[in-house]
Length: 611
Image (cartoon, rainbow, N blue to C red; front, side, top):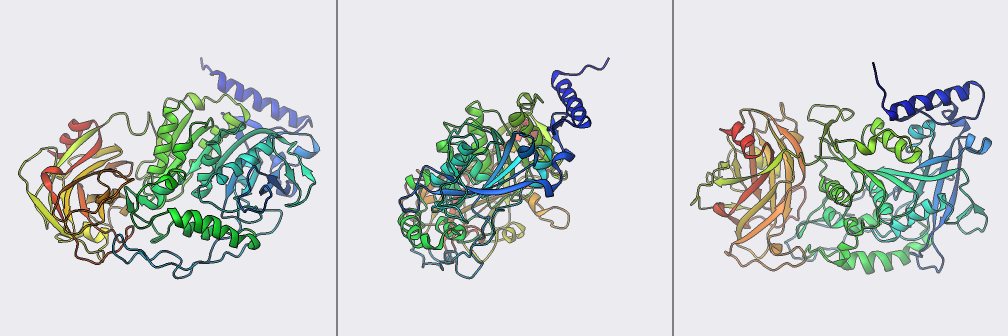
Protein backbone atom coordinates (compact mmCIF):
# COMPACT_ATOMS: atom_id res chain seq x y z
CA UNK A 1 0.00 0.00 0.00
CA UNK A 2 1.25 3.51 -0.85
CA UNK A 3 1.90 5.41 2.36
CA UNK A 4 1.90 9.21 2.43
CA UNK A 5 4.12 11.14 4.81
CA UNK A 6 2.55 13.84 6.96
CA UNK A 7 3.92 16.69 4.88
CA UNK A 8 2.41 15.31 1.67
CA UNK A 9 -0.93 14.59 3.38
CA UNK A 10 -1.02 18.15 4.65
CA UNK A 11 -0.17 19.51 1.21
CA UNK A 12 -2.89 17.47 -0.53
CA UNK A 13 -5.56 18.34 2.03
CA UNK A 14 -4.76 22.05 1.84
CA UNK A 15 -4.83 21.93 -1.96
CA UNK A 16 -8.25 20.25 -1.92
CA UNK A 17 -9.54 22.67 0.70
CA UNK A 18 -8.46 25.80 -1.12
CA UNK A 19 -9.65 24.52 -4.50
CA UNK A 20 -13.03 23.73 -2.99
CA UNK A 21 -13.16 27.14 -1.37
CA UNK A 22 -12.70 28.83 -4.73
CA UNK A 23 -15.29 26.56 -6.32
CA UNK A 24 -17.97 27.66 -3.87
CA UNK A 25 -17.10 31.34 -4.20
CA UNK A 26 -15.31 31.74 -0.92
CA UNK A 27 -12.35 34.02 -0.39
CA UNK A 28 -9.26 33.46 -2.50
CA UNK A 29 -6.40 31.82 -0.64
CA UNK A 30 -2.94 30.53 -1.57
CA UNK A 31 -2.87 26.99 -2.96
CA UNK A 32 -0.19 24.41 -2.14
CA UNK A 33 0.80 21.18 -3.81
CA UNK A 34 3.78 18.93 -3.13
CA UNK A 35 5.09 21.45 -0.65
CA UNK A 36 5.10 24.38 -3.09
CA UNK A 37 2.87 27.43 -3.53
CA UNK A 38 0.94 27.06 -6.78
CA UNK A 39 -0.06 29.69 -9.32
CA UNK A 40 -3.58 30.76 -8.48
CA UNK A 41 -5.72 32.34 -11.20
CA UNK A 42 -7.27 34.57 -8.57
CA UNK A 43 -3.89 36.29 -8.10
CA UNK A 44 -2.62 36.14 -11.69
CA UNK A 45 -4.23 39.10 -13.43
CA UNK A 46 -1.74 42.01 -13.40
CA UNK A 47 -4.53 44.51 -14.08
CA UNK A 48 -5.99 43.64 -10.68
CA UNK A 49 -2.76 43.95 -8.71
CA UNK A 50 -2.52 46.88 -6.33
CA UNK A 51 0.69 48.83 -6.83
CA UNK A 52 1.75 51.76 -4.71
CA UNK A 53 4.82 53.34 -3.12
CA UNK A 54 5.76 54.97 0.17
CA UNK A 55 8.73 56.01 2.30
CA UNK A 56 9.86 54.09 5.38
CA UNK A 57 11.60 55.99 8.14
CA UNK A 58 14.94 54.53 9.29
CA UNK A 59 16.99 54.99 12.47
CA UNK A 60 19.89 56.85 10.81
CA UNK A 61 20.77 60.13 9.12
CA UNK A 62 23.48 59.32 6.60
CA UNK A 63 23.23 62.50 4.49
CA UNK A 64 23.71 64.88 7.42
CA UNK A 65 20.54 66.93 6.99
CA UNK A 66 19.44 66.46 10.61
CA UNK A 67 16.50 64.22 9.68
CA UNK A 68 16.14 60.47 9.80
CA UNK A 69 16.55 59.05 6.29
CA UNK A 70 13.49 57.58 4.60
CA UNK A 71 13.71 54.69 2.13
CA UNK A 72 11.62 54.61 -1.03
CA UNK A 73 9.55 51.41 -1.13
CA UNK A 74 7.12 49.98 -3.65
CA UNK A 75 4.48 47.30 -3.10
CA UNK A 76 2.75 44.92 -5.51
CA UNK A 77 -0.06 42.84 -3.97
CA UNK A 78 -3.13 40.87 -5.02
CA UNK A 79 -6.38 42.82 -4.94
CA UNK A 80 -7.77 40.41 -2.34
CA UNK A 81 -5.46 42.00 0.24
CA UNK A 82 -7.72 45.04 -0.09
CA UNK A 83 -11.14 43.62 -0.97
CA UNK A 84 -11.13 40.51 1.22
CA UNK A 85 -8.79 41.41 4.04
CA UNK A 86 -6.30 38.75 2.93
CA UNK A 87 -2.90 38.89 4.64
CA UNK A 88 0.11 37.44 2.84
CA UNK A 89 3.87 37.08 3.36
CA UNK A 90 6.37 39.21 1.46
CA UNK A 91 9.17 38.52 -1.02
CA UNK A 92 11.48 41.53 -0.71
CA UNK A 93 14.33 42.71 -2.95
CA UNK A 94 16.43 45.81 -2.30
CA UNK A 95 18.98 47.36 -4.64
CA UNK A 96 21.16 50.40 -5.33
CA UNK A 97 20.70 49.90 -9.08
CA UNK A 98 16.99 50.49 -9.64
CA UNK A 99 17.27 54.22 -10.42
CA UNK A 100 20.19 54.06 -12.82
CA UNK A 101 23.98 53.95 -12.64
CA UNK A 102 26.94 55.98 -13.88
CA UNK A 103 27.58 56.04 -17.62
CA UNK A 104 30.25 53.78 -19.07
CA UNK A 105 32.88 56.36 -20.01
CA UNK A 106 36.65 56.23 -20.31
CA UNK A 107 38.63 56.85 -17.17
CA UNK A 108 36.06 55.97 -14.48
CA UNK A 109 38.29 53.18 -13.11
CA UNK A 110 41.67 53.58 -11.43
CA UNK A 111 44.63 53.29 -13.80
CA UNK A 112 46.34 49.93 -13.18
CA UNK A 113 49.39 50.65 -15.33
CA UNK A 114 51.94 51.47 -12.64
CA UNK A 115 54.45 49.86 -10.33
CA UNK A 116 53.31 48.20 -7.12
CA UNK A 117 53.36 50.62 -4.20
CA UNK A 118 53.02 53.73 -6.38
CA UNK A 119 50.22 56.23 -5.92
CA UNK A 120 47.96 56.00 -8.98
CA UNK A 121 46.63 59.06 -10.72
CA UNK A 122 43.02 59.95 -9.95
CA UNK A 123 40.18 58.71 -12.10
CA UNK A 124 37.17 60.42 -13.69
CA UNK A 125 34.25 61.04 -11.32
CA UNK A 126 31.00 60.34 -13.21
CA UNK A 127 27.58 61.70 -12.33
CA UNK A 128 24.50 59.46 -12.32
CA UNK A 129 21.32 60.65 -14.00
CA UNK A 130 18.40 59.27 -12.01
CA UNK A 131 15.77 57.32 -13.93
CA UNK A 132 12.43 55.75 -13.05
CA UNK A 133 8.96 56.96 -12.27
CA UNK A 134 6.66 56.55 -9.29
CA UNK A 135 5.19 54.35 -8.03
CA UNK A 136 7.11 51.46 -9.62
CA UNK A 137 10.71 50.97 -8.47
CA UNK A 138 11.17 47.57 -10.11
CA UNK A 139 9.26 44.72 -11.73
CA UNK A 140 11.65 41.99 -10.58
CA UNK A 141 10.23 38.94 -8.76
CA UNK A 142 6.63 40.04 -9.37
CA UNK A 143 5.48 37.67 -12.10
CA UNK A 144 7.05 34.72 -10.31
CA UNK A 145 5.69 35.25 -6.81
CA UNK A 146 2.52 37.38 -6.82
CA UNK A 147 0.51 34.72 -8.75
CA UNK A 148 1.64 32.22 -6.11
CA UNK A 149 0.14 34.24 -3.29
CA UNK A 150 2.97 36.48 -2.17
CA UNK A 151 3.29 40.23 -1.92
CA UNK A 152 6.43 41.63 -3.60
CA UNK A 153 8.22 44.64 -2.14
CA UNK A 154 11.21 46.60 -3.47
CA UNK A 155 13.28 49.37 -1.95
CA UNK A 156 16.06 51.58 -3.22
CA UNK A 157 19.20 51.60 -1.08
CA UNK A 158 20.27 54.72 0.84
CA UNK A 159 21.30 57.55 -1.44
CA UNK A 160 19.91 55.91 -4.57
CA UNK A 161 16.76 56.74 -6.49
CA UNK A 162 14.20 58.44 -4.27
CA UNK A 163 15.64 56.97 -1.08
CA UNK A 164 17.24 59.53 1.19
CA UNK A 165 20.71 59.29 2.70
CA UNK A 166 24.04 58.33 1.19
CA UNK A 167 25.48 55.15 -0.27
CA UNK A 168 28.23 53.73 1.95
CA UNK A 169 28.99 50.49 0.04
CA UNK A 170 28.81 48.07 2.93
CA UNK A 171 28.36 50.58 5.75
CA UNK A 172 25.88 50.03 8.59
CA UNK A 173 23.11 52.06 6.96
CA UNK A 174 22.91 49.54 4.11
CA UNK A 175 22.02 46.87 6.70
CA UNK A 176 19.69 49.07 8.73
CA UNK A 177 17.74 50.30 5.69
CA UNK A 178 16.17 46.91 4.76
CA UNK A 179 15.77 46.22 8.48
CA UNK A 180 13.59 49.34 8.71
CA UNK A 181 11.45 48.13 5.79
CA UNK A 182 10.96 44.75 7.49
CA UNK A 183 10.15 46.54 10.74
CA UNK A 184 7.50 48.53 8.87
CA UNK A 185 6.03 45.33 7.43
CA UNK A 186 5.70 44.18 11.05
CA UNK A 187 4.24 47.42 12.39
CA UNK A 188 7.40 48.51 14.20
CA UNK A 189 8.46 51.42 11.93
CA UNK A 190 6.64 54.30 10.32
CA UNK A 191 5.78 54.54 6.64
CA UNK A 192 4.77 57.78 4.91
CA UNK A 193 3.00 58.59 1.66
CA UNK A 194 5.63 61.20 0.75
CA UNK A 195 9.35 61.63 1.41
CA UNK A 196 8.84 64.67 3.66
CA UNK A 197 5.13 64.34 4.49
CA UNK A 198 3.39 63.27 7.70
CA UNK A 199 0.60 61.08 6.33
CA UNK A 200 1.34 57.55 7.46
CA UNK A 201 0.90 54.20 5.69
CA UNK A 202 0.45 50.85 7.42
CA UNK A 203 1.18 47.38 6.05
CA UNK A 204 -2.15 45.92 7.24
CA UNK A 205 -1.98 43.33 4.44
CA UNK A 206 1.31 41.77 5.64
CA UNK A 207 1.59 38.67 7.83
CA UNK A 208 4.96 40.01 8.95
CA UNK A 209 6.88 37.09 7.49
CA UNK A 210 9.50 38.17 4.94
CA UNK A 211 11.87 36.40 2.56
CA UNK A 212 14.61 38.26 0.71
CA UNK A 213 16.45 37.41 -2.49
CA UNK A 214 18.41 39.08 -5.27
CA UNK A 215 21.60 38.78 -7.31
CA UNK A 216 25.03 40.40 -6.84
CA UNK A 217 24.61 43.66 -4.82
CA UNK A 218 20.91 42.76 -4.59
CA UNK A 219 22.06 39.45 -3.11
CA UNK A 220 24.36 41.16 -0.63
CA UNK A 221 21.55 43.17 0.94
CA UNK A 222 19.52 40.15 2.16
CA UNK A 223 22.59 39.04 4.09
CA UNK A 224 23.13 42.59 5.34
CA UNK A 225 19.56 42.68 6.65
CA UNK A 226 19.86 39.22 8.19
CA UNK A 227 22.96 40.20 10.17
CA UNK A 228 20.82 42.68 12.13
CA UNK A 229 18.75 39.80 13.53
CA UNK A 230 15.54 41.64 12.54
CA UNK A 231 12.37 39.83 13.58
CA UNK A 232 10.22 38.76 10.64
CA UNK A 233 13.03 38.05 8.18
CA UNK A 234 12.56 34.29 8.08
CA UNK A 235 14.61 33.23 5.06
CA UNK A 236 17.12 34.67 2.60
CA UNK A 237 18.23 33.36 -0.80
CA UNK A 238 21.27 35.42 -1.83
CA UNK A 239 22.53 34.83 -5.38
CA UNK A 240 26.23 35.55 -6.03
CA UNK A 241 26.42 37.96 -3.08
CA UNK A 242 29.42 40.12 -2.30
CA UNK A 243 29.95 39.20 1.34
CA UNK A 244 33.21 41.08 1.91
CA UNK A 245 34.37 44.15 0.05
CA UNK A 246 37.98 43.29 0.88
CA UNK A 247 37.57 39.92 -0.81
CA UNK A 248 35.97 41.72 -3.74
CA UNK A 249 38.72 44.31 -4.27
CA UNK A 250 41.76 42.67 -2.67
CA UNK A 251 43.26 39.19 -2.40
CA UNK A 252 45.63 38.15 0.38
CA UNK A 253 47.14 41.62 0.59
CA UNK A 254 47.16 42.18 -3.16
CA UNK A 255 45.29 44.93 -4.99
CA UNK A 256 43.07 42.85 -7.30
CA UNK A 257 40.16 43.90 -9.47
CA UNK A 258 36.90 41.97 -9.82
CA UNK A 259 36.72 40.14 -13.14
CA UNK A 260 35.56 42.36 -15.97
CA UNK A 261 36.14 45.62 -14.08
CA UNK A 262 39.89 46.23 -14.15
CA UNK A 263 40.71 49.18 -11.88
CA UNK A 264 37.39 49.29 -10.03
CA UNK A 265 37.51 49.97 -6.29
CA UNK A 266 35.03 50.72 -3.54
CA UNK A 267 34.98 54.50 -4.22
CA UNK A 268 34.26 53.79 -7.89
CA UNK A 269 31.27 51.60 -6.93
CA UNK A 270 30.00 54.41 -4.69
CA UNK A 271 30.01 56.80 -7.64
CA UNK A 272 28.49 54.15 -9.90
CA UNK A 273 25.35 53.85 -7.73
CA UNK A 274 25.01 57.38 -6.32
CA UNK A 275 21.69 58.23 -7.99
CA UNK A 276 20.04 59.96 -5.01
CA UNK A 277 19.03 63.58 -4.40
CA UNK A 278 21.32 65.84 -6.45
CA UNK A 279 21.25 68.47 -3.68
CA UNK A 280 22.79 66.00 -1.21
CA UNK A 281 25.53 64.59 -3.43
CA UNK A 282 28.25 67.16 -2.65
CA UNK A 283 27.84 66.52 1.08
CA UNK A 284 27.83 62.75 0.59
CA UNK A 285 30.92 62.92 -1.60
CA UNK A 286 32.82 64.89 1.02
CA UNK A 287 31.80 62.96 4.12
CA UNK A 288 31.43 59.43 2.75
CA UNK A 289 33.38 59.03 -0.49
CA UNK A 290 36.36 61.23 0.37
CA UNK A 291 36.51 61.04 4.18
CA UNK A 292 35.86 57.31 4.49
CA UNK A 293 36.09 55.29 1.29
CA UNK A 294 39.00 56.95 -0.48
CA UNK A 295 40.80 57.63 2.80
CA UNK A 296 40.87 54.03 4.01
CA UNK A 297 40.61 51.80 0.94
CA UNK A 298 44.42 51.88 0.54
CA UNK A 299 45.36 51.03 -3.05
CA UNK A 300 49.02 51.38 -2.08
CA UNK A 301 49.57 48.33 0.15
CA UNK A 302 46.34 46.34 -0.30
CA UNK A 303 46.46 45.45 3.40
CA UNK A 304 43.40 44.43 5.42
CA UNK A 305 42.39 47.06 8.00
CA UNK A 306 39.51 48.04 10.27
CA UNK A 307 37.76 49.80 7.40
CA UNK A 308 37.61 46.55 5.42
CA UNK A 309 36.72 44.54 8.54
CA UNK A 310 33.67 46.77 8.96
CA UNK A 311 32.55 45.84 5.46
CA UNK A 312 32.81 42.09 5.93
CA UNK A 313 29.44 40.53 6.76
CA UNK A 314 31.14 37.44 8.17
CA UNK A 315 32.08 39.61 11.15
CA UNK A 316 28.44 40.64 11.73
CA UNK A 317 26.67 37.29 11.65
CA UNK A 318 26.18 36.64 15.38
CA UNK A 319 22.61 38.10 15.53
CA UNK A 320 21.50 36.30 12.35
CA UNK A 321 18.48 33.98 12.70
CA UNK A 322 17.15 33.69 9.14
CA UNK A 323 17.36 30.41 7.24
CA UNK A 324 19.84 30.55 4.36
CA UNK A 325 19.80 29.06 0.87
CA UNK A 326 23.03 30.26 -0.75
CA UNK A 327 23.56 30.31 -4.53
CA UNK A 328 26.69 30.89 -6.62
CA UNK A 329 28.63 29.90 -9.73
CA UNK A 330 32.01 28.18 -9.48
CA UNK A 331 33.20 30.15 -12.51
CA UNK A 332 32.10 33.54 -11.24
CA UNK A 333 35.27 35.62 -11.50
CA UNK A 334 33.47 38.83 -10.61
CA UNK A 335 32.00 37.99 -7.20
CA UNK A 336 34.10 34.90 -6.64
CA UNK A 337 32.71 31.67 -5.19
CA UNK A 338 34.51 32.11 -1.85
CA UNK A 339 31.98 34.85 -1.01
CA UNK A 340 29.14 32.35 -0.64
CA UNK A 341 31.12 29.50 0.86
CA UNK A 342 32.51 31.50 3.78
CA UNK A 343 29.01 32.61 4.82
CA UNK A 344 27.47 29.17 4.28
CA UNK A 345 30.17 27.59 6.45
CA UNK A 346 29.69 30.13 9.24
CA UNK A 347 25.90 29.79 9.16
CA UNK A 348 26.23 26.02 9.36
CA UNK A 349 28.64 26.34 12.30
CA UNK A 350 26.09 28.61 14.01
CA UNK A 351 23.41 25.94 13.69
CA UNK A 352 21.26 27.91 11.25
CA UNK A 353 19.13 26.04 8.74
CA UNK A 354 21.11 26.31 5.54
CA UNK A 355 21.85 24.75 2.16
CA UNK A 356 24.08 25.76 -0.75
CA UNK A 357 23.51 25.61 -4.52
CA UNK A 358 26.47 25.88 -6.88
CA UNK A 359 26.49 25.78 -10.69
CA UNK A 360 29.39 25.66 -13.15
CA UNK A 361 28.76 28.98 -14.89
CA UNK A 362 29.61 32.61 -14.19
CA UNK A 363 28.07 35.53 -12.34
CA UNK A 364 24.46 35.15 -11.28
CA UNK A 365 22.23 32.13 -11.62
CA UNK A 366 19.59 31.57 -8.94
CA UNK A 367 18.52 28.14 -7.72
CA UNK A 368 15.68 26.49 -9.64
CA UNK A 369 12.32 28.15 -8.99
CA UNK A 370 11.04 24.91 -7.50
CA UNK A 371 13.81 24.94 -4.90
CA UNK A 372 13.23 28.58 -4.02
CA UNK A 373 9.50 27.91 -3.87
CA UNK A 374 9.95 25.13 -1.34
CA UNK A 375 12.07 27.37 0.87
CA UNK A 376 9.71 30.33 0.71
CA UNK A 377 6.66 28.10 1.15
CA UNK A 378 8.05 26.48 4.27
CA UNK A 379 9.45 29.54 6.02
CA UNK A 380 6.84 32.11 4.99
CA UNK A 381 3.62 30.07 4.85
CA UNK A 382 4.64 27.49 7.43
CA UNK A 383 3.94 24.50 5.18
CA UNK A 384 5.61 21.36 6.51
CA UNK A 385 7.36 20.24 3.33
CA UNK A 386 10.45 18.92 5.10
CA UNK A 387 12.92 21.30 3.47
CA UNK A 388 14.65 21.97 6.79
CA UNK A 389 15.22 18.26 7.43
CA UNK A 390 16.73 17.27 4.09
CA UNK A 391 19.86 15.18 4.51
CA UNK A 392 21.49 16.70 1.41
CA UNK A 393 22.80 20.18 2.15
CA UNK A 394 24.57 20.86 -1.15
CA UNK A 395 23.18 20.97 -4.68
CA UNK A 396 25.84 20.98 -7.39
CA UNK A 397 25.06 21.38 -11.08
CA UNK A 398 27.35 18.96 -12.85
CA UNK A 399 29.41 20.10 -15.83
CA UNK A 400 27.02 19.24 -18.67
CA UNK A 401 23.74 19.50 -16.80
CA UNK A 402 21.18 22.28 -16.86
CA UNK A 403 21.09 24.66 -13.92
CA UNK A 404 17.58 23.43 -13.23
CA UNK A 405 18.90 19.90 -12.57
CA UNK A 406 21.46 20.00 -9.74
CA UNK A 407 22.85 16.83 -8.19
CA UNK A 408 22.30 16.50 -4.43
CA UNK A 409 25.26 15.86 -2.13
CA UNK A 410 25.52 15.46 1.61
CA UNK A 411 27.46 18.72 1.83
CA UNK A 412 29.99 21.02 0.23
CA UNK A 413 32.83 20.24 0.30
CA UNK A 414 31.93 16.65 -0.51
CA UNK A 415 32.42 14.68 2.74
CA UNK A 416 34.34 12.07 0.75
CA UNK A 417 36.95 14.64 -0.31
CA UNK A 418 40.27 14.53 1.51
CA UNK A 419 43.37 16.73 1.11
CA UNK A 420 46.06 15.39 -1.19
CA UNK A 421 49.42 17.15 -1.11
CA UNK A 422 51.11 17.37 -4.50
CA UNK A 423 54.76 18.16 -5.12
CA UNK A 424 56.65 19.79 -7.98
CA UNK A 425 59.30 18.35 -10.27
CA UNK A 426 61.52 20.54 -12.46
CA UNK A 427 60.98 20.83 -16.20
CA UNK A 428 60.40 24.47 -17.16
CA UNK A 429 60.39 26.53 -19.38
CA UNK A 430 58.35 23.71 -20.86
CA UNK A 431 56.45 21.80 -18.17
CA UNK A 432 57.45 20.25 -14.88
CA UNK A 433 55.76 17.45 -12.99
CA UNK A 434 53.02 17.44 -10.37
CA UNK A 435 52.49 14.34 -8.28
CA UNK A 436 51.95 12.97 -4.79
CA UNK A 437 55.56 11.76 -4.75
CA UNK A 438 58.00 14.14 -3.08
CA UNK A 439 61.25 14.05 -5.02
CA UNK A 440 63.81 16.16 -3.20
CA UNK A 441 66.57 18.30 -4.68
CA UNK A 442 64.40 19.59 -7.52
CA UNK A 443 66.15 22.92 -7.24
CA UNK A 444 64.78 26.29 -8.28
CA UNK A 445 63.11 27.67 -11.41
CA UNK A 446 62.62 31.29 -12.44
CA UNK A 447 59.94 33.19 -14.34
CA UNK A 448 60.00 36.72 -15.74
CA UNK A 449 56.91 38.86 -15.24
CA UNK A 450 55.26 40.22 -18.38
CA UNK A 451 51.68 41.39 -18.04
CA UNK A 452 51.33 41.56 -21.82
CA UNK A 453 50.75 37.79 -21.74
CA UNK A 454 47.33 36.84 -20.43
CA UNK A 455 46.81 33.76 -18.29
CA UNK A 456 45.10 31.68 -20.95
CA UNK A 457 47.96 32.25 -23.40
CA UNK A 458 50.49 31.26 -20.77
CA UNK A 459 48.60 28.06 -19.96
CA UNK A 460 48.37 27.09 -23.62
CA UNK A 461 52.01 27.83 -24.45
CA UNK A 462 54.27 24.81 -24.93
CA UNK A 463 57.17 26.79 -23.49
CA UNK A 464 57.30 30.16 -21.77
CA UNK A 465 59.77 32.12 -19.68
CA UNK A 466 56.87 34.07 -18.19
CA UNK A 467 55.31 31.28 -16.16
CA UNK A 468 56.09 28.02 -14.41
CA UNK A 469 53.78 25.09 -15.18
CA UNK A 470 53.64 21.73 -13.40
CA UNK A 471 51.32 19.00 -14.65
CA UNK A 472 50.07 15.62 -13.51
CA UNK A 473 50.17 12.51 -15.66
CA UNK A 474 47.20 12.08 -17.97
CA UNK A 475 44.11 11.02 -16.00
CA UNK A 476 43.04 7.45 -16.79
CA UNK A 477 39.60 8.08 -15.26
CA UNK A 478 37.54 11.08 -14.20
CA UNK A 479 38.82 12.83 -11.06
CA UNK A 480 36.40 14.60 -8.73
CA UNK A 481 37.71 17.52 -6.68
CA UNK A 482 35.52 19.25 -4.09
CA UNK A 483 36.54 21.95 -1.66
CA UNK A 484 39.17 24.65 -1.28
CA UNK A 485 42.61 24.00 -2.82
CA UNK A 486 45.57 25.60 -1.09
CA UNK A 487 49.07 26.47 -2.30
CA UNK A 488 52.33 27.16 -0.53
CA UNK A 489 54.84 28.90 -2.77
CA UNK A 490 58.41 29.40 -1.60
CA UNK A 491 59.78 32.23 -3.68
CA UNK A 492 62.28 35.04 -4.00
CA UNK A 493 61.91 38.27 -5.98
CA UNK A 494 64.56 40.48 -7.48
CA UNK A 495 62.44 43.51 -6.53
CA UNK A 496 60.85 44.69 -3.24
CA UNK A 497 57.31 44.03 -4.54
CA UNK A 498 55.70 41.60 -6.97
CA UNK A 499 52.32 40.20 -7.91
CA UNK A 500 51.78 36.48 -7.37
CA UNK A 501 49.12 34.68 -9.40
CA UNK A 502 48.24 30.98 -9.40
CA UNK A 503 45.92 29.17 -11.76
CA UNK A 504 44.88 25.55 -11.58
CA UNK A 505 44.14 24.44 -15.14
CA UNK A 506 42.99 21.40 -17.07
CA UNK A 507 45.15 20.55 -20.09
CA UNK A 508 45.33 20.22 -23.02
CA UNK A 509 43.71 23.61 -23.49
CA UNK A 510 41.43 22.76 -26.39
CA UNK A 511 38.66 25.35 -26.68
CA UNK A 512 37.03 23.34 -29.43
CA UNK A 513 36.41 20.33 -27.20
CA UNK A 514 36.68 21.64 -23.64
CA UNK A 515 34.81 24.69 -22.41
CA UNK A 516 37.00 27.50 -21.11
CA UNK A 517 35.27 27.09 -17.74
CA UNK A 518 36.53 23.51 -17.72
CA UNK A 519 40.09 24.55 -18.59
CA UNK A 520 40.26 27.00 -15.68
CA UNK A 521 39.69 24.84 -12.63
CA UNK A 522 40.27 27.60 -10.08
CA UNK A 523 42.51 30.58 -9.36
CA UNK A 524 44.08 32.65 -6.59
CA UNK A 525 46.26 35.70 -6.00
CA UNK A 526 48.48 36.99 -3.19
CA UNK A 527 51.00 39.65 -2.27
CA UNK A 528 54.29 38.08 -1.12
CA UNK A 529 54.83 41.20 1.01
CA UNK A 530 51.97 39.92 3.18
CA UNK A 531 53.53 36.50 3.78
CA UNK A 532 53.12 36.99 7.57
CA UNK A 533 49.72 38.70 7.72
CA UNK A 534 47.23 40.35 5.40
CA UNK A 535 47.15 43.25 7.88
CA UNK A 536 50.85 44.00 7.52
CA UNK A 537 53.12 44.10 4.49
CA UNK A 538 56.86 44.55 4.33
CA UNK A 539 59.14 45.08 1.33
CA UNK A 540 60.77 41.91 0.05
CA UNK A 541 64.51 41.63 0.33
CA UNK A 542 65.73 40.83 -3.17
CA UNK A 543 67.02 37.29 -3.33
CA UNK A 544 65.55 36.23 0.01
CA UNK A 545 63.07 33.34 -0.03
CA UNK A 546 59.63 33.65 1.57
CA UNK A 547 56.83 31.13 2.07
CA UNK A 548 53.43 32.36 0.90
CA UNK A 549 50.42 30.17 1.73
CA UNK A 550 46.90 30.97 0.55
CA UNK A 551 43.64 29.41 -0.58
CA UNK A 552 42.46 29.22 -4.16
CA UNK A 553 38.78 29.67 -4.91
CA UNK A 554 36.38 26.87 -3.83
CA UNK A 555 35.42 24.42 -6.55
CA UNK A 556 33.55 21.21 -7.22
CA UNK A 557 34.54 19.86 -10.59
CA UNK A 558 34.99 16.54 -12.32
CA UNK A 559 38.19 16.63 -14.40
CA UNK A 560 37.69 14.33 -17.37
CA UNK A 561 39.77 11.29 -18.21
CA UNK A 562 42.45 12.20 -20.74
CA UNK A 563 43.11 15.62 -19.18
CA UNK A 564 46.04 16.69 -17.02
CA UNK A 565 45.87 18.99 -14.01
CA UNK A 566 48.32 21.87 -14.21
CA UNK A 567 49.56 24.21 -11.49
CA UNK A 568 50.58 27.46 -13.16
CA UNK A 569 52.57 30.05 -11.21
CA UNK A 570 53.10 33.50 -12.70
CA UNK A 571 53.28 37.09 -11.55
CA UNK A 572 50.99 39.77 -12.99
CA UNK A 573 47.55 38.65 -14.16
CA UNK A 574 46.40 40.85 -17.01
CA UNK A 575 42.71 40.45 -16.12
CA UNK A 576 42.94 41.08 -12.38
CA UNK A 577 46.14 42.64 -10.95
CA UNK A 578 48.05 45.88 -11.32
CA UNK A 579 50.22 46.12 -14.45
CA UNK A 580 53.84 46.90 -13.53
CA UNK A 581 56.47 47.11 -16.24
CA UNK A 582 57.74 43.69 -17.40
CA UNK A 583 60.97 42.32 -16.02
CA UNK A 584 60.41 41.34 -12.37
CA UNK A 585 61.94 37.91 -11.73
CA UNK A 586 60.37 35.40 -9.36
CA UNK A 587 62.43 32.35 -8.40
CA UNK A 588 60.49 29.41 -6.97
CA UNK A 589 62.02 26.81 -4.67
CA UNK A 590 60.37 23.63 -5.95
CA UNK A 591 61.12 21.59 -2.83
CA UNK A 592 59.35 24.20 -0.68
CA UNK A 593 56.28 24.59 -2.92
CA UNK A 594 53.16 22.39 -2.71
CA UNK A 595 49.57 22.21 -3.86
CA UNK A 596 46.95 20.70 -1.56
CA UNK A 597 44.03 19.44 -3.61
CA UNK A 598 40.69 18.26 -2.12
CA UNK A 599 40.11 14.96 -3.93
CA UNK A 600 37.07 12.72 -3.55
CA UNK A 601 38.46 9.40 -2.21
CA UNK A 602 41.66 11.19 -1.21
CA UNK A 603 45.12 9.90 -2.07
CA UNK A 604 43.75 6.53 -3.18
CA UNK A 605 41.43 8.22 -5.63
CA UNK A 606 44.21 10.44 -6.97
CA UNK A 607 46.76 7.68 -7.41
CA UNK A 608 44.22 5.37 -9.02
CA UNK A 609 43.72 7.80 -11.92
CA UNK A 610 47.32 9.08 -12.29
CA UNK A 611 49.34 5.86 -12.25
